[in-house]
Image 1 (cartoon, rainbow, N blue to C red):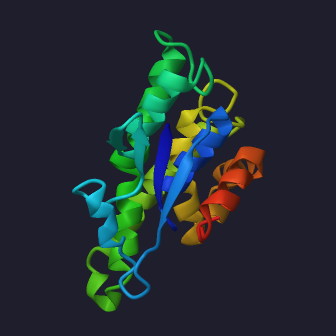
Image 2 (cartoon, one colour):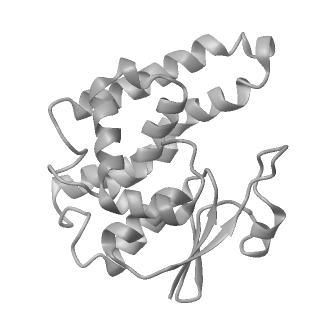
Length: 207
């Protein structure tokens, strides 16, 4: 049994997308952000002490971290789908993207999100944050030029993991500067599985 503890406007939307791509049955337990603070509700802490989403229950085990959840689901239940064959260079590249999405690419975007609330108080940090965002989005753009997907010519878990990076870049109005990345985000959102996940997950302001 698979149960997704799903927070609106969060990274857990891509886990719903993954499950739809794999055609796996699952349940959704929905949580809403606080209307004032935008923080996750304390009820999530009853599931896992960190109180973050996504959280996934798989046969009674609580899993956290998007990249780990994606890798575990694909390895255990993917039947060879959405990942290159192990032992290949493509599989190595796929694993790099799974780690890069949250380990590097999201950091400057999250700093932009948080410091954007500080107004002029964030001015000393802004040039460095902007340059790091440009560095990372420029890198992703260079990897997508002339390609439909990040690894091996077809959709993989790497695209699902990295999709949130593209969506947050869209929220900040940055995608016009990165046309290959913009088209990739459109391809992600055009997939029937993504559309079904969106309908099931509810409010998602990053599309």
